[in-house]
Image (cartoon, rainbow, N blue to C red; front, side, top):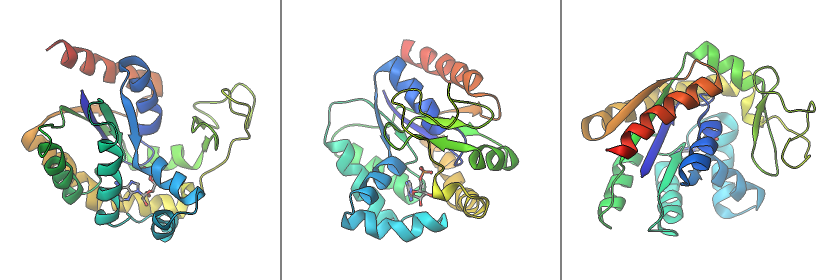
Length: 217
Ligand code: AMP
């Protein structure tokens, strides 16, 4: 299975990917996580991405496509779920081209649909673990001990791009540049629309229902 998970920032892509990976044993490739690792390591790529990420804008396609194609081709035989990529029609077309060149394709697309006000409420309350990447929410998905990661005891942080102003920019980028990707895939692939306004466990159940049926086919 080669899966793309689409959805606005804050739709729960990261949380759902971790659950998909745990159940189906896929490799999780998150463009946002890779960029944050590059930034933390102080690489040229990380430096290039920094100002875009801090303002909530998209990093240029050429940078992202090269980075993600490299990540995918490191494990060519492995099935994966892509999280946060592709985010533009151009990225989707470049991904298809690169997969086609080695006889592969995207098998299924999950589209997490969510209202903007729910996104704003979720993202400003989001906290994440700087060590393992686990994601929590101050109201909807609390850790066992406030402010501390359940997995490794690290102090949880708020991502700098989860402020209200930056969230508004990220939503704008999503509507202008990423929503057309859904139509791109609807023309060529199986796209499952999932109501992501629901709580995390309900969304997981919907995703598993669709993927289980897909896997049986
Ligand atoms: P995320 O964690 O997926 O919300 O990504 C955080 C930030 O990284 C985004 O706001 C963008 O600035 C950048 N980014 C991540 N993935 C992409 C992508 N596929 N294309 C362009 N920019 C991206």
